[in-house]
View 1 (cartoon, rainbow, N blue to C red):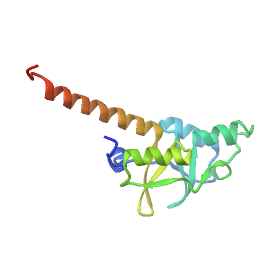
View 2: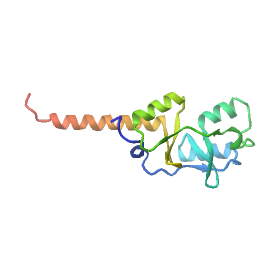
View 3: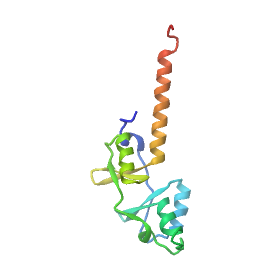
View 4: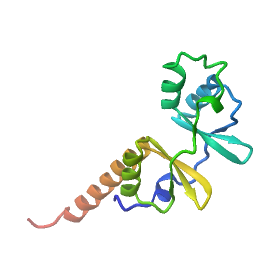
Length: 145
């Protein structure tokens, strides 16, 4: 279960991308609409960083900045942590713990192919555990005791 590859967990994602000159208010609406806690900040095809719920809380709300006039380029996380798509669930859990982050970019070489969150990891572990339990139950069903 914990040896499953991150590529299998993220599947084919369509990541939310906004430009660095987008306001935090617009970004927050887009994140809410797409039900995501983080998004890429990109200048064309070049990734500049990510913007997360934590960035919004710590760098905008706690700093008493206006979401309508604050730009992503001023409050995003530049050079975010990343892992290879070939990493396993357990390697990803340890990478998040070590880097003290809730989101990791997933890369294939130098290209960003996805993003994984703590929520995604928890769902993958629970789903995998349930599947394993169902397999064990099926094996023992009708077995003479």
